[in-house]
Image (cartoon, rainbow, N blue to C red):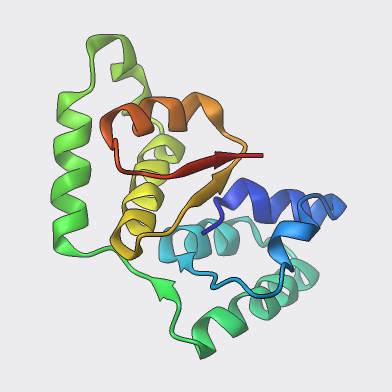
Length: 134
């Protein structure tokens, strides 16, 4: 599973193309990532790109939504954050990253990201999350 930043880097500059287009792997997309991609699609061209990107995931049934269990876990994780990280709670990108991590965990997927700041914190709370930093 790829974090939003991996797709954005690929769309903008073909970075991480070898990961995204790698054959022989099963790929999932978090519904939260899809939401973030659509939120950033502010032109017809960008909308076409997101539409094309989402199609194979939707057709294969591999867009992973949040469950009630995920929402509860996210709330618990946020509640348990040390005071030193409480400033992140007010940022939607951090909360979304928690949700993306939980969707990856729900299907046992490794999560590829370039966001070390958020995922170092999230990974320390979700010990079984397999993070791959690129």
